[in-house]
Amino acid sequence: MPATSAIVDQLIDGPGFVLIPRLIDASEAAQARSRALEVAASPSGATFGKFNEKIRQQHSRGLLAHGEIFERLVQHPAVIEIAEAMLGDDMTLGAYSARILYPGATEMGVHIDYPYWAMRGPFTLRPPLMVQVIWMLQDFTEQNGATLVAPRSQLRCAPPNREVFAREAIKITGAAGDAIISHGLLWHDTSQNHTEEPRVALLINYGLKVIRPLDSGIANVAPAVLERATPKLRQLLGLEYANSLSRDLTRGGLY
Image (cartoon, rainbow, N blue to C red):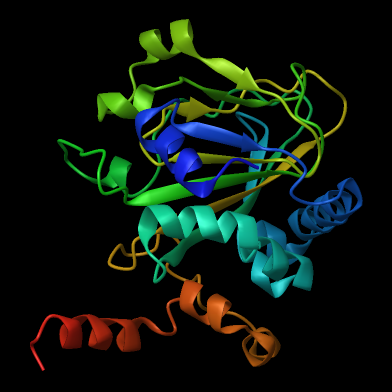
């Protein structure tokens, strides 16, 4: 893997995304994929992410209640190192979900990520407000809905233009266990799934600690999860937010 500083340069001033290969074994990716599909098919999965019949996609939240594998992936050391280099070591988790593209799925629609789409703009490239990680839980191919991105579109610091995106977008293909990391301002979309199998990915949004999470219930996890939570997971869930603010005030000389 390239040096973290080089990856940060690519995310901010370069293509706006990086593909990190083989961060987990294909077997672990398959385990996460199977569990994500089970969650999506369960009553709780429907509660946290109903099937969108129009585009044949499902977005299932609340993964931390459904298996330790999801706890491990959100804290993967390589991912955390890159995200913290962008956002600071007190960053928090904004959203965590599985995105399932069923056979026949169409594009979701080109977009930038929260919090940018919730802001009026103009946007600024620095400091980054959010970093997204897409875990490939199976091979991403030309046929099964691989992620579309417009390289360097984060440099425009603007909402996406569909015509420009159609001209510039490329598909990011890769293998199970790879991860795509991107700046929140990068224009991106899903592509069509022409296969007979669901394409499953995990989406993780890390943000500056002062950004309100997109998923307002992100910290509502089962007691068993909290009991075994590492300090890093507690920080990501915002449970150390008050302590972090107190340290900032102390450093600022206000106390």
